[in-house]
Length: 178
Ligand SMILES: [Cu+2]
Image 1 (cartoon, protein in one colour):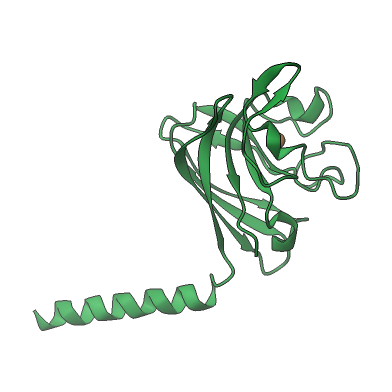
Image 2 (tube, rainbow, N blue to C red; image 1 turned 90 degrees about the vertical axis):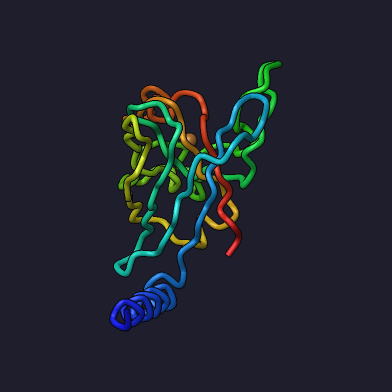
């Protein structure tokens, strides 16, 4: 009985120590399903942390995503609402284009010199997405207040087809301002 109590205590304090030091700057982003009707249910989270050698790490944990490859990007505007284009409401359009502070106007993937918001595509299984991906060019200041967007279909990291070939916007979250 005594031993078990001790173990619980040490478990508790070790956890607190870790979160106070190594993960102090983590930012957790709620990800919601989006449709032409607007923002729907929460389907998971993305936890963003700064890597010691530079760049950001994204710990993606989602359910309710169709199995297969899904494009993943930072979009310029922190708004996941639907917006009208060509007379039709489209999911997540209020988030604007890929984050592109240098106006490269080119989609080159997470390690290229194009949109700074290009991230590695995600691969969903029938259980959802549970992966950690990295983007070497980004800082927390870059993503603060912007949108994380998930697209149906993959991403070939080129401009052919446009924006890596990703299709509709299916899930989105706004990064809290830091
Ligand atoms: Cu995108």
